Every structure is written in structure tokens, then in C-alpha cells.
Image (tube, rainbow over all chains, first blue to last red; front, top):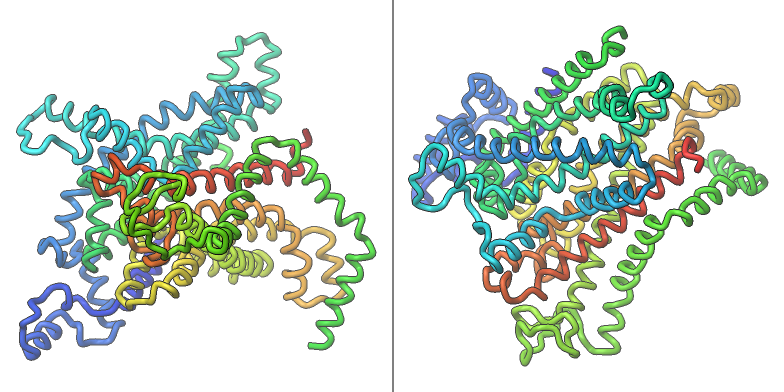
Amino acid sequence: MIPVLIGVSIIIFLIFQAAPGDALTGMMDPKMSYETKQKIRKQLHLDEPAIVQYKYWVQNVIRGDFGESFYFKQPVGRVMNTYIWNSFYLSLASFILSVLIAIPIGVISATRQYSFIDYFFTVFALIGISMPSFFFGLLLIKWFAVDINLFPVSGMMTPGSTAVGFEKFKDVLYHMVLPLTVLTLGSVAGLMRYTRSSMLEVIRQDYIRTARAKGLREKVVIYKHALRNALIPVVTIFGMWLPGLFSGAMITEAIFNWPGIGPIELLAVNNRDYPLLMGINMLLAFLTLLGNLIADVTYAIVDPRIRLK
Amino acid sequence: MAEVKNNLNKGVELKGAKKEDIMSPWKIVRHRLRRNKLAMAGLYILLFMIVVSVFGPIVQKYVFGITMEKIDLYNISAPPSLKHPLGTDEVGRDILTRLMYGGRISLTVGIVAVSISVVIGSIIGGISGYYGGVVDGIIMRFVDIFMCFPFFPLLLMLAAVLSDYKVDPKYRIYFVMVIIGILSWTGLARIVRGQILSLREQEFMQAAEALGLRDRRKIFRHLLPNTFASIIVSATLGIGSAILSESALSYLGLGVTPPYPSWGQMVQVATDYYVMKYEYWKWIPPGVCIFLTVMAINLFGDGLRDALDPKLKR
């Protein structure tokens, strides 16, 4: 895990080295004299070779210091902390909703393979995978926010709202409906197909036939005996969703102007806010690795056969 | 070099002699595909999109005299009419014609990006799977590093760097293809590697060994062709996701840039409230095109996967 993380940091650093201009271009007043610029460059070690700069950067990152965002004029850590939780709430809601919808649908599709309902959900899943999120988001905004004014166009709370407690929660939920729909459509599709294929494999096994032969009701066979084993591979992909929970869906968030990490990253890209971009990407890469680790560990927990190897 | 060529020729001849044997699995696949209505629907939609994108602009140009750039000053932001079946945009260009050109670009980006990722992915996967051991360890760590990156943010960053270097829009399209291709080979590399790891233990590889074939020949002529089924499935589905990435990137203004149209970029006008509410013809058709094309590719790819799966004998 550590070597991979070092590799990731080197590549991220190299990409920013390849970008024209340096940390100073975005940060400083253009009227500043050449001498002062050189002085600041020296202070920030920008006059030194890339390897030395990398060393300084890594030292700071380990101490949790990602530098200062050009755009927000604040430490990168603080900027990320402000926005990442908004992404987290939205993604968590979408995650819970997708699990609740996708797993039952996956099971039903698998138990009635090649039936009308199975084809229906297969096509539904393909629609979910094929729909560009930005287009679906715009369509929802047009239909439900612009044309009939049922839901707000964007944002996370009514502007100027001072509501607290439950009222605030309701307001956020109300703003969440449309982005949540977009996010959930995409993830339900993937998860459902995954559950379906995993369930199909389990259903064909001998022990399921045994369970039926000893006279268990079909419901017990499917939901107690089969589902447990079918969910083993599904559980592991939960771990891989960890980075997704924090990175948010950049485009969906941007379209609904949800104040999460997605629009911030776009803002950072458009303003060439390199420290912020490096910080976000390092964090996401770290979370991806952590997610893989969690996936491996949960696999071992839920499937004792893995532990023996 | 001459020897290699000679061997290659021999290979071709051998293949020709046993033509029936080699063809038959593909016949089974074609037969299975034909029975899968969803897959065939996907294939027809896709062919329709390709034919219209390739030949549509020619028809428009020589029959109706409308090109991508032609401005109709009397019809600016005009709704669909007989003259402009899908209306015109804010400077009076015909939307249908731009959609066709956009289709050319979006489909080309998808195909080229996937070709790049297939070439990189199968070479790296092949080498990694064939040599195993330390080579495999190093290559797979490298793949891990690549997989760790959040795909879309990285794509955005690289596209932004492109903008900083002020790449000409004409060449920018190619850079976008290359970037998407370079960022998406890892999945395929893993699949190919996994299959080759088990293939190289099989008997025909012992025969190859006994014949004293070179590594390169063993990998590219004996191992990789056996992974062809997975490569073709993942490439087909890959085209769909490459088109989605390109359209999202272009929607954000970081992919294909004007004057060249792309479907994603054409949807961008919907960020304007007035356009979104009243001028549906400007942004809904390109969005529907992206959706239909990707959907068709996914339907076909899925059918292909089922048809190529030897375990499935329905």
C-alpha cells in the first residue's frame, strides 16, 4: 500500500510540474517586482530542482499541510474539510438508497431469469449506465424545477434560510431530491446487475437444491440461504465505494450547484488552483487505497474460505 | 527480419488450411447474437448512428448545401422547421448538421481512445501474465497506481493542462483521444493478465515451448489471440464509456472545443435558463444522441459477452 501511495504522489506531482507556470503565477499580484518574486520563489523553494521540491511537498503532506489554496486564500485542508461533508451526505444518502433498491431488484431478476421482469430491469439498468449524468440532471431540472417548479433548481438550502434542527434537515432533503435521483440511477444500475449475476451463480449450487429438497419455503431458500452467499462479492464493492462517498459525483454536484467537493474541484481546475487540486487528488487516491484494503478485509470477514488461503 | 516474415506467412497458410475449424466458433457466436433481440437492436441503432454521422454531412453539403459552419441569418435560434428539421442554434447554424459532425467526432474519439487502451492494455497484460514473477509484480503495482487515481478528476486536470498550452482545437481532439485512452487501459490489462496466467500453463504452450518459439511470438500469436473474446467485449463496452467521458469533458468545456462540435459540448447551452426552458431543440437532441449511442453499444456489448461465453449454452 505504501509504495503505491508513493507512486501516486510522484505522478500527481509530475502532472503539476508539467503544467505551465508555478505556484507563484496564480498567487501573486501581477504588479509585483521581479526581485520580490524571486525572493518569494526562494522562500517557497520554487527555484530548486523538482526532486527537492517533491521532498518538501511530501514532508508537508505527511504533516497534513497541503499548502494554501490560491483561489480561497485558505489552507487546502480547511477548504476540503468545509465542502467534503456536503458531498458525503449526498453520497451517503444515495448509497443507502441504491442498496435498498438494487439488492431486492437484483434478487428478483435472478430468481426469475429471462422473465419479462428480468428483461425490464436489465433494460432499466442499461439505461442507468448509458445515461450521461449531466444530461439526465439537466432534464430533471427542466422537468421538475423549471417547468413545474416542484423542486429547487440548485443549491443545498433555501438562500437566506436560518432554519435549524429538523427544519434545516427537511430543507436540505428537499434540495437533495433531484441530485439524489441522478446519483442513485447510476449506482442502482451497477449494483443491481452485480447482485443479479452473483445471485445467479449461487442459485445453481447444490446446497440450494438441498435446501429446497428438505422442504424449505422458497422465500427462506432465497432470502436466507442464497442471499447470504450472493452478497459476499457485493459487500466487497462497498469498500470500493469509500472514495466515491467523499469525492462525490463531480458533474452531478456541479449541475445542481451542490456545495460539495465536486464543484470545488471544477473551480480549482478552471482557476488552476494547483495546491487544492493536488490535495483533493491525494486524498482521493488515499481513500481509494483504503477502500481496497477495507474490501479485502471485509471479504475475509464475510467469507471464511478466503482466510484459509 | 526475413525469417520472421516467413514464419508469419506460414502462420497465415496454416490458418487458411484449417479455415473451417477456425470459422466455426465465430459462426456459433453470430448465431447466438442473432437470437438476442436486445443485442441486435443495439447493433442496428449503432449502425444507424455510424451511417448517419459518416454520410449525413456529405448529403447535407451536396444536396442541401448546408455545412457545419454555414450561418442562416434569417433563422437564428429558430425552432424545428422543414428547412432545419432540428432548428438552428444561437448563430443560425443548422443543428441537425452539427449533430452529424458531432457524431463523427464523438464516435471517433470513442473508437480511437479504445484502440489506444486496447493496444496498451493487451501488450502490458500479455507481458505481465507471460513472464509472471518479478516483472508481473512490478507491472501490477504500476497498474495499482494507475487504478488508484480518481479517473475523472485526473482527466479534468490533464485537459486543463492542455488548455494552458493553448493547443489548437484541431489537434486538441486528438489529445483528448490519447488522454482518455491512456487513462483507461488498466482494467483490460488486468483481465488479459489473469487469463494469460492460466493459459500459459496449458499444453499448447508446452508445444510452443518445444518448438523453440520466441517469447514475442508466444505472447502475440499464441496467448493473446486466446484472450480475444474478453478483449473484444471490454473494448466494445469501453467505447461506450469513452464516449461518455468525452461528452462529460466537452460539456465542461475541457474536451472538444469550438468550432468543432461534439455532442457533449452542444448540451452545454442548456446551462442558460432561457435555452433550457424554451429552446429544447438546442440541447435535447445531442443529449439523446449520446444516450442512444452509448445504450446501443452497451446492449450490443452485453449480447456479445453472452454470445462469447462458452459456459452459456442456451
